[in-house]
Image (cartoon, rainbow, N blue to C red):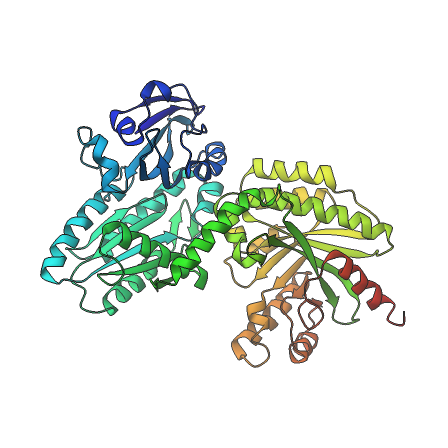
Length: 545
């Protein structure tokens, strides 16, 4: 263990820390948490530490380091803020859990029983791992089969960022209580990280047992949480590994369940996935993407593409949507579906979003000089850019720096519908944008939980029908009904309605018949580099040239 003051200066370490790391206490005390103690993966851990401290948040991860004597060790590291009575940070508490037996050789005299999790009362990661090792030893003799479920809450950081850690802590306690209701007497349940939980099931007859448990957990978590009259809807992603086929040690089973959890996240919220060996390659790629993201901005690897938006009635180009892409030096072209969610998770999305805003505003100035007015350009805003007032202040600073209103050029900001659920700062952000002459659109409409009251209170100019509904029209009667209802509602509220993902003439005809104002999708054009987007507009306006 180590302790640091509110400014991040290390004030104490215990003997177990020194024995595990090979570092003397006098060489650590007085240095900052952000200091580079090791030569291995510590630099990757530090990448998210500075911003986590600034946001008063927990940071955690696995490190593999080398001591001064050349030996190595593997550990799970977490650094968490401990708050005072006024909600500020009293100090930071860091904990390292050794993940391999060899790492414990130097700390045998300092080891103590691993405490339960103080927030939820569940077992800690260390206690779970110890008990799982004993269970595996018993199972190897009896032939018993086991399952490990690794659970991660989807987009939980948005709750902490927008509603505060006090609400976040209450949610975690509520999640722990709901999980207790699901487990059986012989099952083991633990909180292994900030919003991560693990469950060990004994006596597995077949794979249907963990499937039934995973479904039950998803149902329990999906039930709304109500805090101070506010309803929160949460979902979770679960990964499942089985003993003995997926691993014969506690570490391998937990790691493989964690790997499967990431596959479940890719499938969508509130889902589960079994571990498969090929998933390891996907996780390794994810780690490569995560490590590369920290350097992508400084290496100028991002590029902005623009997808045209068309007025359905006239067929003219009214604007476009700016979409960030990543030209990775090893992986090639990386689409946003592979890195945006990860950028939000590691708190890089605000930096990327600011870069996109500057790039688009500069490009709009170039297009204005080239005579492309009138033109509207939409830029997506991450929920993290509107969650708190200080995030809005940062957004204001970027816009003051790069946005200069030009006649005929209109900047539009798109906010996803789901972000309205967790952001109490949304109204302040919307008012800021309107004060700067910027229009506001709600993206992915129909997939979140926003109410008609939110649409009425926010100064919204446009709603965008999510592509998942457009894809089902006109053949899918449910999707067609939702699409028609959103168009009618938008008209009633005096809003413009734009449909995303239009790919067929039949979809366009349906939208036209129901009075949809605008559309974008592959029927008109794929996203284009800036120069090709300009040629597209010039040709659309002067087809004879």
